[in-house]
Image 1 (tube, rainbow, N blue to C red):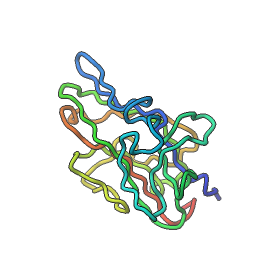
Image 2: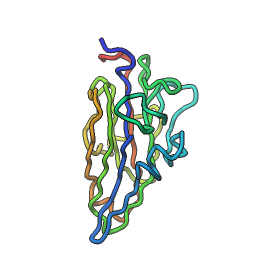
Image 3: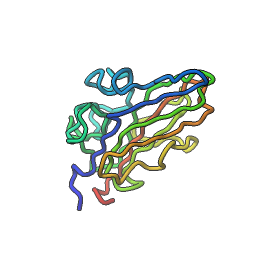
Amino acid sequence: MKSVVSRHIGLMCFFILASFGSNAQIVHIDPAGDGGFNTGTSLALNNWTTNNVAGQNTFWACGGAPWASITNRAAFITQTGLNYNNSLSANRVAHMWRPITVPAGNSIINLSFLWKCEGAGVNDRMRVYAVPNTYTPVWGTQMSPTYTPVGLANYSGQATWTTANITLPASLAGTTFKLVFEWVNNGLGPNG
């Protein structure tokens, strides 16, 4: 049986979203600058929005990673404070996001980040979405089935840091969209 700590997720110490056009690359999220997690000690100070609910466990946070191979701040799911684990006692859904504007003509859009998640498959997992800027995720509610995750269907079951490299749809060029990270866990314990 896995321990509580083994159900943590940590991600995005290295996080780049860049778009490429015929003449230039534009970095939209820079790990050392705007949108990375090293500008400030909270997600808000790094220009991310969450739908965390006061008094509810399982929420997005930002802080120094306790994992030896990662030296920068990361975004992560936690139960209380900065303890790097999530609730084992209830079904939970939490989101973090930020708007991204990609210039027209920059149709090659790449997202890269480090992630680690020892959740239990589809029951405890992270998903990544690129949704219309008008859509606002609701705490406790999974993303609308209208939207399809980008990258892996479920970021879960990964005990070591792994790089995700995702090519976002070219149709996002010339638009402003929300890049959303969704965490879902059930209340069945570390193996459920």
